[in-house]
Image 1 (cartoon, rainbow, N blue to C red):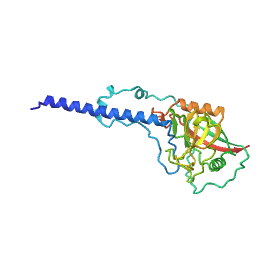
Image 2 (cartoon, one colour):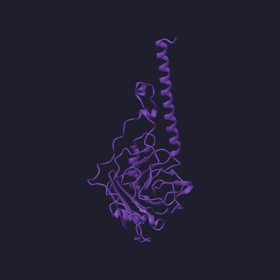
Image 3 (cartoon, rainbow, N blue to C red):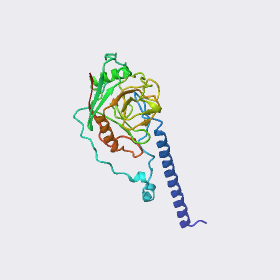
Image 4 (cartoon, rainbow, N blue to C red):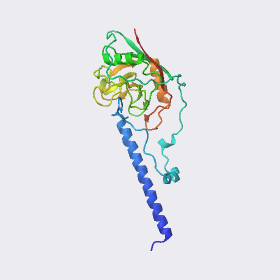
Length: 275
């Protein structure tokens, strides 16, 4: 007959094994997730679900709390955030705007246009490639003129595998858009050598399917290996690139290389000017 002490020890061993299995599964999931970040941008527009998770599997009961001291890893120990390098957002609220169709072409395709993002972290100027990406530039001119981007958060920062800041979603969730889509453009741009989007590139996000760009876009702050599937439509100024690197230096909130930026990155106002 099994004594109470023997039974107690057996239950303790079983509980320990369950805890180890959960932790091993969590670490395996985190490793797999980091390994695919470089190949999957996970950009999301109109009506789609965000293609990235915001954290590694959590321990799910009190047993794990009792053994927390035995489960510390280098990544888990980095819990303190860097100081927020950005200012408080300007007063105002995001406009809830949506359209059923892509706006009619109103820009002069032979002219030069500049997108200015006045953010809480500093101004980011983007020289847009009008002739190569007229639909994209026209859409930005339209949306900026309607105040669509004003007071919106840049909701995603990647710091592992690919190095981008993603903005342009009025919902801040990764699933918002303007209600319409625009065609892919300029996918054979000379700057995209060896499937690398060089630092300073501004490109459209999409769902992973052709011609699904909307309002979300990403700004590359360090050379990033990506398939040429995302419309490159602009180049960030040198001063703007410094702002992006400042944001990146503050990190993101998951510690896994893909999440919301720790910096308070809000586009106070977006404007498009013709020169």
